[in-house]
Length: 155
Image 1 (spheres, rainbow, N blue to C red):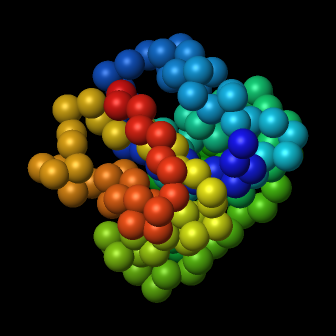
Image 2: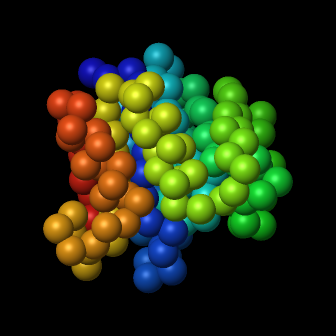
C-alpha cells in the first residue's frame, strides 16, 4: 500500500453538495489514509480544501499542504481551510514563487508528485486528458510519465 500520496483536483466543485465529496473521499481516500500515510495536497480552493478538511477530520495520516507562493496569497476559502485544519497539518510548504501563474502551479504539482508513490486525481467529469489541459490532468500525466500509479476519480 502506498504511504505517500499526492492529491490533485479541480477548483470547480460547486456542481455537487459537500456531502457528495465527503462520500467520494470516504470511498477513494479512506483506503489509503492509515496512520503511516502522508498526503501532499495543494492549498487551493475546491478539491484541495475539501480534501484537506476531510483528511483532517477523518484520518490520522500526515498532511503536507503545498502552495506555489505563500498561504497568505491563497484565496480566502483556501486560507480558511488551512487555518481550520492547522492542528492536523504536519507541514506547510511555501514554494515562494515570485509570481502566481500557471508555471508556479505546475512546479507545485511536480513537487508533490516527486515525493509521492501514488497520485489521486479528481478532474471534472466533462474533461479528459486529450482535450482539457488542466492542472489536474497535467499532474496526472506527469505522474504517469514517471511510471507511477494514478487513481482518477472524475467528478
